[in-house]
Length: 452
Image (cartoon, rainbow, N blue to C red):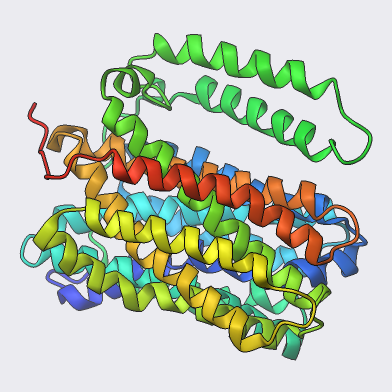
């Protein structure tokens, strides 16, 4: 029987959880540089390859609220270890994928396993770290932010050196260290009463069916249109809406969204921000490799200009929020994302790389402003009792934006990719950027805490 440390050092506790939590953003970001290589490996179109992104985020969106509740029932440590084991299994099987379907299943398993780690890890931090909890939570945010920022660079280096299989095998050092530490460091908790009725399995299934069939319809618009998928998607959304209205603990709390319009606009804004940002995060690596002819390693380094910049801007945004609230940095984020988007229209076949990097830095700045400011705007519009559910739906909003971006890329990059296709994506993102700016301007100027 494993003997758990009675009073582990807080830094060791945070390190154990952080090494697990980083797996989701790391694996969701490394794939951006791997898409072109996987297209060639499995003879895929961009539309088909985009399912590697959409399936991951869709499984994450469905998984996190489920595992958050299962963590309460079975114990967060047990769920944390199970999540690590699932990611390990997926990462072991993926390199041996005989076809694209097998690889897609492994990506879904990765998402499910890594989605277990965040809610169970956060639950333990909130319960067992009573002193310096804010610092611990901020440190875990850094784990996620850095892994997401450096994911494309790590993935590019690994693919160029060892081929695409390495982006799955690189998970094992993190999994092994986190698993061993978790056995000895994380506290055990007795199982509570198991009440699976609290989990909205039907709502999640309806949501998944509606989303998958709707994406199938959209991706088919450039080819042979799958008309059959549209009525299934519409029926799925309608049934989902009426079913969720009568659930005590729904997957998506539609009553709260209807009664709290400011909160609904926060979610809509976050969807739009992620739609625009991830169109570039996943689209530019394809453009850099297929059109500009850069290698995976070079592409990963170039992407660091956009992804890494957000990490440095985030602390500045945090201090600005403390002084002036979330609205000013959100407006700055909206302006920079719109400016960077418009400047991308100046990129041509022979534009110098340094000019593209400057534009990517501007886009990265917007991400640094937007992420932390949106979280603050979220908490300004919910009561403390609503924070847990609101945070879960906030993550779902991020996933919906990411899924939308991969669908747009799959549709618009489906044929021969050239500068004109990139500009078409930019025009779509200009609309998204204008909506982000409008939603930022409508936010209350002063922070107003909701009361229960």
